[in-house]
Length: 252
Image (cartoon, rainbow, N blue to C red; front, side, top):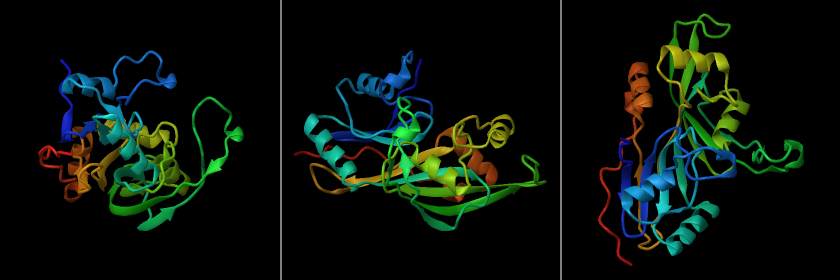
């Protein structure tokens, strides 16, 4: 039996949930043959309709928000479009990442339907910060030791695969990224560290509640895979403190 989704917040107008890695948010033309989706599971769990307002990539885990009515959906979508939502991600990358940097490489849209050359490059900006590092006495690449970093990433725009592409372009691909990463490091983490997935998690989301206007800061814990890795690497001081419980209903 599939366990229920972990709710981070629930009120009369919106719900925030911890999306498991590997689960699609909703049906799309690129997901033919898939039968399980976050939107349907959440709808069935709550017993009511939910409205998507933003997205997380399939392999990314973490916090995602749904509206519970069309007006709230429109207000939240407007907030995301106007960049009035703060986002915080944690990623494990190859190498010693930059201490603090703004990555602003323009990115072409990746929709899988047209050649990249036909797609214009669009503005994209991500602020990154190195939180910690680890050096393992293992030869994975050409060096006798292998070094990895824990990076915090805050995307200021919302391009597809933005964090993954920006960090890879900078020379620090995220572990487990099959498309933009390094296969030998991905295999090492999968075979020796029990991490066979993309090590990218959306751990924070902040915005003004569309009805009450009060600031809402949501924090999502890491899943078991990333938590165990953090413990192994001595990074437990960076584990997110989750939102304690759904807040009381906010009345209009």
